[in-house]
Image (cartoon, rainbow, N blue to C red; front, side, top):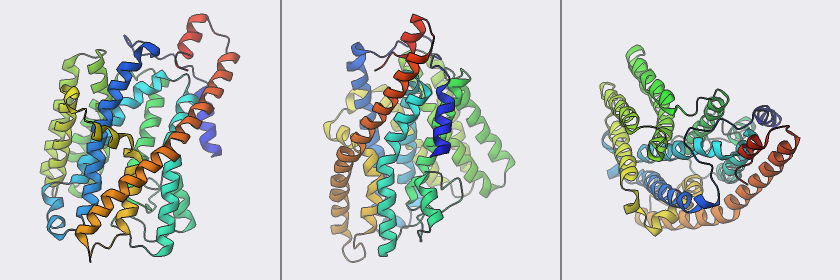
Length: 380
């Protein structure tokens, strides 16, 4: 935690004055618009998390498991949608904070409390001998637990206690990239990052052997999806022209289709195309998908994503597959609702409290003009 604190302290020295052109500050008059946008994103997240839940349940059904990778990877579909929604909101959220320390403390306490609880639960499951699913760790040594607690296990080539943790590592990488873009005053150009990463995907497919190209192209494409979400946000808010959004979208489509030249990518490409189509439809017709139950699922989507696999692993699928399916859905929803209420919300509130105290102290300490002070302390 010392290293993490040092990173936050370093970035906190930079004033948050890298505002996007034509983006108004977020104040009380924008609460209704922000709420509508968040409801729309919650609806999209709900589809994503439910597809991930279904993918992990259907692995126990032999009929689906026999062809899931060859035709349609449902879990990957949900992950790509998740990345799009994160990319849509994180960069603009960073701009609305008072400082880098405010942004980082808020994100840390948004990400880690529920995550740490799921790590502890996963360790308990391993000690009790609950069968782990493919992609999850088969043991819980001290080093494995420590690396998983940091969210960086995938990058340290350590086994993941739960297979879904790798996406959180990419989210953390995206936070770092957003912070660097702010320092370099490049966050107003997400199309530059998205286009560069998509072009890199093409080069990787050309230069690397097939097996390596599949892996490295996928990881690069995931990060590109995050920046594509930011491009979509700029286009929808009028900051960037529509032609920029269509250009990046068509480039993304070409990169995805180009993967068909690599072996064993049919199901992967189908999932990515479906995720792109859903995201585009949500952007164009978002008022039509605001259904109450889906919005609620979106609100608990983070806890549902973290805890559902721990419940799925503990059920008697071999003996009672149908009963286990219903139990997995009901228990996952119940645990996620409790986790969102008792773990996520207090963590978010605590992170905002710490960030506000830190930013308030920093604002009083800075010798800045009235306009600069207003820009730094726009959102309380």
